[in-house]
Length: 145
Image (cartoon, rainbow, N blue to C red; front, side, top):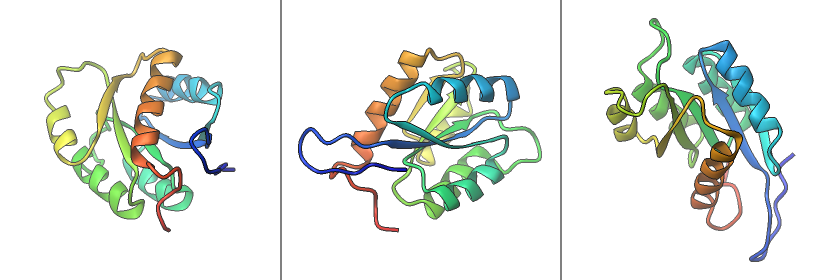
């Protein structure tokens, strides 16, 4: 459950949806997320299409999206645009195998805010989520649904 309070020291739970095609990476990141304070993992999906449906249902604050979704999936930039349509105000961060991936620029152009390596440490993951969470919800409240 999302905790919302007011005031300068208010803490709220950041809701995160994970969309990663590789099961091992998905399970490792889900484990990292479940161990972080004030983070709620609202779903872990294997495809971009499933992530769109899950985002519509769970209204995450942040989506961690695999840059290398398998063939047959919609292109990642289209997935980002759909995520932002079904869940206005969501921040998307790209999970990448290597930062120099040419597919990253179109994803950022489509609205992704940042990228992080798939082998990110729990501390690095938490730092990214803290950066994206407060920037998305300056008032400490979720956008109107």
